[in-house]
Each structure stands twice: as structure tokens, then as C-alpha cells.
Length: 206
Image 1 (tube, rainbow, N blue to C red):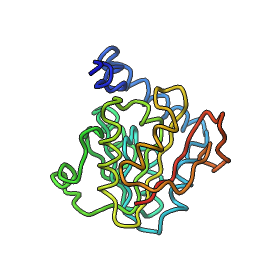
Image 2: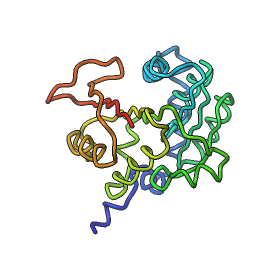
Image 3: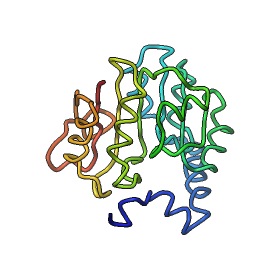
Image 4: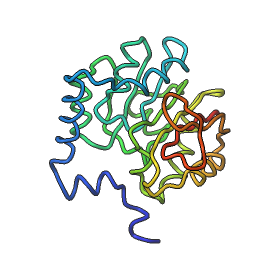
């Protein structure tokens, strides 16, 4: 196997630059303090979920999306492999539950050890998380997310082009994982998806 196929891009970036996570978190805090609208993803997820839904923020980063959803009344669990980002999420968004966990190995058994044994109504992944996954893990991540959902639950995955994961390959992998692709869009505002789109938001159902 190609060595790069098993490397998580985010983990590699942090290993090469230990201050990367801190700068990333400070950037989002600065944008929030400047009044920038950072809630586009969260508004879509909120509209798709019944009030009080169990929601998994897969690759939660600083918790900006999951935190919004928790304040809307949802039961939000967020996971990320970056310890510093989880620290920031706990500080800035204490309404939700945040855990250090690697999405590439996250499954129902792992979540149960964290006290999260119930299936989720909705899973989402924003912030180009799927572009950071090691190529070898992508199919397993999708299968695990499928397994974490209740029957009829949905996953919403968004990431940009040019990150080493072709959109068509992603949709095929999602199908192999057991998902039905309900729709593909080119933005979190549900703009139509086209062949030359530079962003994909996929709505998948279990």
C-alpha cells in the first residue's frame, strides 16, 4: 500500500507544524468576533432535524457548527482527533459533549466506551473533514457512520474539490457503505450540483 494512503492529512500537518491547530482555532474565534456569518452549515442541519435530535458532529474541530445546534435544543456529540480543538470546543460551546476520538477508527463500540451508546438521528461532517481522511480509511469511515445511525437516519457530508477525493468516488463509496444518496448540492445553501462544481454537500440516508 502507498504510504500516503494511510496518512491522515490533518495529523500530518499538525505533526509538521505544532502551532497549526492553535492558529486554526484563533482564526475562527477572530471571524466570530468580527461578526462573520459562520452558521450556514448549522442552519441546514437544524432544518433537517426534529427538535431534540441526537446529532453526531463528525470531525467537529472547534465546535462552531455543533455548538449552534446544541443551543437550538439538539443533543450534540462531537468528535475530533485534535486535542487542542476539543479543548476549544469545550471552552466555547459547553452545551454539547466533545470527545477526542479519531474518526478513522470511530465505531459504535468506541462511542459506547464514551457513554454514547444510543444511535444518532443525524450525522454531519463539515469543514472539509473528508478531504483530510487517509484514503485507505474512507470506506471504513462511511461504513462506521452508517452503523451509528438509527434506521431512517441521515448523514450530511460536505467537502471541497481538489482535496484528493473525487466526488463521484465518494458517492460510490457511500453506496458501498449502505447509504442511499438522497441528493447532491454545491453548497450548504443547497445550490444545484453541476459537473464542474467545486464543492459537494451530499445528503445520505440509512
